[in-house]
Picture 1: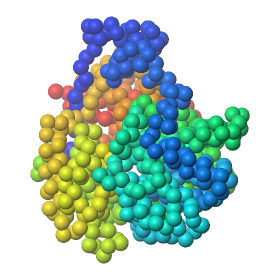
Picture 2: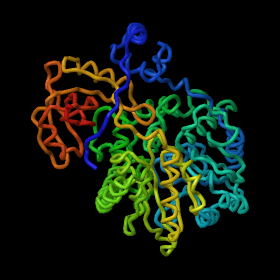
Picture 3: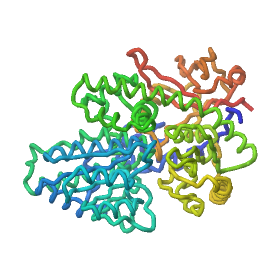
Length: 579
């Protein structure tokens, strides 16, 4: 499969729609191109567009709209009054780590003894285990409070065991619940039956943030804090932004409010750990974007968990000393380099397997490598989805089972709910969990072939008539358009991500200039509105010959900082020969 991509163009705006766009531009005093992009995305009134462009923390919904919140808050207040110990059980990815450190730091403000646990994915696997519950019980005096973050909704047996050991349990999670809910004293999950909370796509750290918000509100009402001394929860939104973007949650409505403010907090770099992380990621200055989280910050935090050392990332985020933060950031960078080496070893084989399956018309890709490191199968799955635009499960041997079981991470495309697919073929699955875009699962080795066929059949049925059609082009532009105005307009639409994709523009029948190869990438320049624009096509070096002739160029327009100076760049998404 080559790098040429088909594209589809959104319908042109004309007639009454064009009139509405001009009115939007006039009412909001924004460029017409921005008004047209907003109109395309359903923001057709001035009020709706204004709310989207200027999300405010004051517009966040009440945390008590989450089912189970009042009971959870009462349990925490009882714990504060009685000075009991608290155990927080998180997970090893960015979402789980940030949710853990948020609640650890917040509950420490009450002077509570807070113990936390992040599982080692190499020896414990995802979420709770009987072992981890038992070990944590040995560290506390009962009754203690046990809070799960970003996990627990499917851990029925483990939660039952925790209750039997004497814990009071609060489950906070955002993954899809199974038919049987765990026997916790309180469950907070926007996806649980009977929860009417508007935002169903909160991240795990987003749920933890709303729990902190509810506790703070109750403590103010009861006079524990006066309004001058109450903690400013905005200071935790850097954690919320990291976890929400890394877990590919939809960046609209509530999540957009949280992430927009969270990016401001990250950009301020007030926490030593955040500052050191940004320095190591090469973004020591300038505005931090959601894209920076996805490609620079989150991979480094995730690297610790992928290699079985999530504590390293938690220590960094909780660090209060600059020297300590620098040392931890260096260790995290080393873990990330190791992760890259492991990923590179597996990726070529995974791409080859995926290509063969695509050539045989499979829609649900199932890949396996006996020596692939369990810590990189998730990122391999993401790379394969980016390449082939099909749902994929990437399996490797379960190191803890003497090869009797295989474990996988899966990633999906917007057209397919991966969790629902796994529900349909769960007769071959030992256990699974996740959400529509990502999941983890375990199957018995001897059932692998049958499961692979069943998975592909389920995907084919569910995607019938909704196969990905290609890269979506938001707007056709021409070489006379004002790129500076376009780039400035796009900044107002950030943060970009799931549910609010970065716009893609199309220049038809143009000649790219100064086309050169830079390792796997393609460098070029464009002349737009009389100004030279730098261009880059990541992993598109194989299109060098195509790029030397007239092409249709689909691209994203970026405002970047290079050696302390801002400039505009075109990032190629589609390079097709002009027909």
